[in-house]
Amino acid sequence: MGEADRSPDRGVGGPQAPEIVFLADVSAGLVEITQMPLYLKGRYLKFDRSLPQTRWPCRRCQGRGCADCGGTGKT
Image (cartoon, rainbow, N blue to C red; front, side):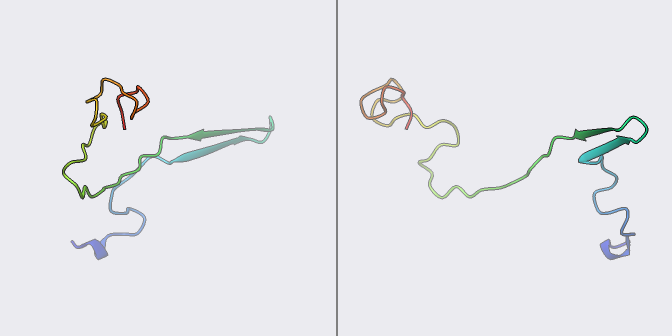
């Protein structure tokens, strides 16, 4: 069964929890809003091998702290 043959209400990823839920109690006049965490997925391209993926220590002092980095040890 191909992707086009699936019913539109099922979707590709299967059943999922709602991202936001509104619960209204009309008799009491209350409204409750519950938000679920939102996960964002992304990618990036690393164009230069000299840039580390972790913290960037100062190249002059190697992270010890100097006048160039303001004593932080980071660039």
